[in-house]
Length: 527
Image (cartoon, rainbow, N blue to C red; front, side, top):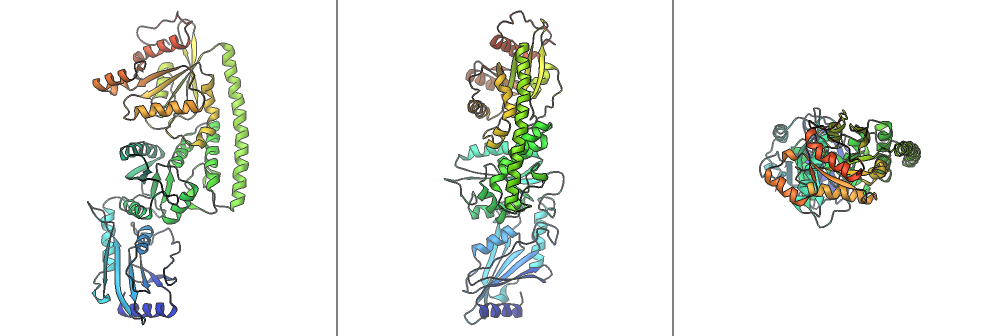
């Protein structure tokens, strides 16, 4: 800002009694003139596409302060959330003359680096800063920590980059453990974790879940890590989602949205897709509030584009009508599955259901026992639809082995309701085999989460066996401690048929005592 430009801006601002500002590009050309009131300046929503490659917007804000005050916290927040090259504040004297200036810019990442630097206040002629060169240098430093962002704010390449955030009253070690699970969920959804943030609070901010200062730190971290998405481990309220979408241009997701997106990607059958769609619509309905880009990340919703593209009331009516149609179709599905279960009961076929935390190895166990090829991957929620296979014994005996969708802590209520048709398979089971990952550091929490869900579904009184899978991953002292903690548990390695003979023997003895004539092939399980 030159002396003549500063003098003209100060005189104009004093004459109308309002703050006046300019958004200027890196060639010094004004992009937008802003006029506020005596206390502040309103910046309208700026175009999402950047004029320059990199992470900053390529614009700097210069505006006046009528009371002679220096750069405010609000100015710094605008700079952070709008990714401006910098903010320059010109104090206006009592007679309209230009006073001191204050300049701030974001800092590149570095150990112990502050998120931004403030210079001044000082006389205008002493502000010896090449603003264009400074912005270019910051861009270069930011570029060293990752690739350039695309125009829609997501990372280039196959995977989008995300910052994972936990804001909770729980102790920090618990939050960090939960963020590890959130990172696994993010990887399943196709997101690359670019960083994490943990904040322990007495109570969450009802408006934005975290304070604006902490949000500014999060925005700077996302900027420095080249992350276009922020994922919260907690479920956000509709108001929090809307407010965060207004504050930041980054995509904001919560844990429920992430799980819904994973289910939408993995649902393979018509019933699975219907259940996922209903869960998404039930999640979306209370969050409809006109056009809101916060909801445009829900895949598999209305036309796959997310709501907010049509008028609010029409949207709500369409969502309710679609939920009603899906419920009717799912009711038909329940009746058909009920008829199938009735036929099994008439045939006298016992049913054993595999339950457990997601990624505990249920599908692998089903494949090994029945020589099947059900999809089994080392990721969360690889299996969504129930799969049943027959396990045959040489003495003309057989049973039905059913693999079900994995459980997870704080299972979203929308999914619990939508997948009732799937989980009804458990109600007809003669025995539940609770499969758990013995080597997981949160094994005990996983066991409690599964037991809590079974209790909520009134399935806790069914006979159960606990199978501790991945036993081979344990050190001897860990195995001994687990055996002492769970003396009735059966250690297994789901991929090794020979290790499963004690489990099958326990299944027969527990649920089918009349099968005393069943014998085993000494070289492995019966075909």
